[in-house]
Image (cartoon, rainbow, N blue to C red; front, side):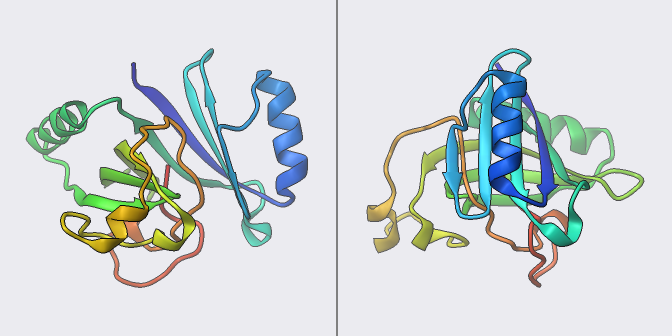
Length: 170
């Protein structure tokens, strides 16, 4: 089952976690400094919170968490056939999780990602790629926790090479 992702910028992470824990009667699936995510079953939602006081109350990005690479690839094929341009990221560590994903930008600049979590990752791997044969892969725990954490802060959503805090992640 896929689930919609909503990533929000919040002023006070502890206060926001308390509120959303009560609202959805669910504890966070993952918590890191400045970051929390909830894997909510009903409604099927991946809620991501980024502590970002400069952008409080704004949308960070949107996405759909897929359960398999096949689903991500099928969605990429469908979107490209519909004429949309994708920014593809393969085997990246973002949000404290190893992921494969692609991004598409809506007509008003909204960033949407389709992704699958391949494995959980430790904080020191954030932003790394190329895991095949890479010594960094040893530090990955091969468990496909449905939650992912943190934010790599890269400008993945726009396909740029620069850094933009709070953009990335699932």
